[in-house]
Image 1 (cartoon, rainbow, N blue to C red):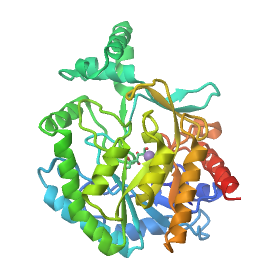
Image 2: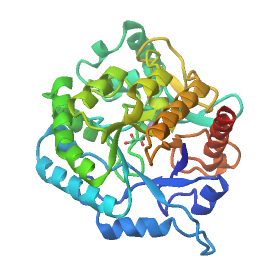
Image 3: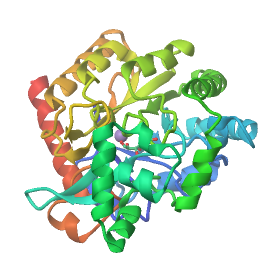
Length: 398
Ligand code: DNO
Ligand code: MN
């Protein structure tokens, strides 16, 4: 595997020098400052490449931009309204510009409105480290009582709705404000943040969009961009829903193996692949991650390796982001499956047989706790995760 690392650009508190000390081999980044839907120009792409090519003292870093994460798909494209045709045309131009700059792997997602969702960014575990957590009852309390979404209560199992009600009524005003503040819809690196009214407006625009409609719109998008990817030698890879179950009554269509299978079969090309994120998919007990790597095989273009500890055996439930080898996912089995897939690619003579992986998220430990970087992306916690994963890789390849 290629050991890569997500970097949010020059304003990331984790620097190019830090990445080198973590033993990173390649960089995953995006032009977060370009508005979604607009073209990524050749100039801006070159600028980002230059930004990661040097250390603080000017010495060459030797690091290259290897994976794009994400080239975002606009809400208009997902809903097929407004400027969606122009956004698809722009998407293709960005793909061309990225290919010209030597990039081959583009990660994106097709989650309506929200990217990752958590209820706590700094949840303290017993070691004193902090991590991100999703508490289903807190989320339900937010949805039912703070967002006050009509019909929300019926979307939760009775026990969860009752717990949400009890927690909410036990809260003082300050607690309710904290809950409203703590429910975070992550738009990593993006400047946007949502007010309650923004969320309500976005939700109302999805009223008429069923999961089937969203899937059809996704297939239309792929029908447009995958032939361009084929021509350019680009591998497109969709990140799963995070968490992989329905939220706020929005359709979610990339939560399971069969979701992936349906999309890959609909536009059947090696260029139409997946980002297998063990952290996102692992929040659901019925996702068999090593099996997915084995079965989805050469369509796995990018790996996000992280672990979650599930706090419920239901499909929708609470979880927290555990240490990389500490959660419910058998990380050794995942790495073994990825190494086996690489072996097959190599035997088939594929030049790009190494799969890029990155330690996706990490707990905040040691000095991370005083230097709060992008939520989920501390330097030391992630480097610890990468080191542990590297250890598994070395042991299994011995
Ligand atoms: C969570 C992260 C995501 C991811 C985007 C990709 O698991 O990896 O925030 O970056 O969803 O589009
Ligand atoms: Mn991920």
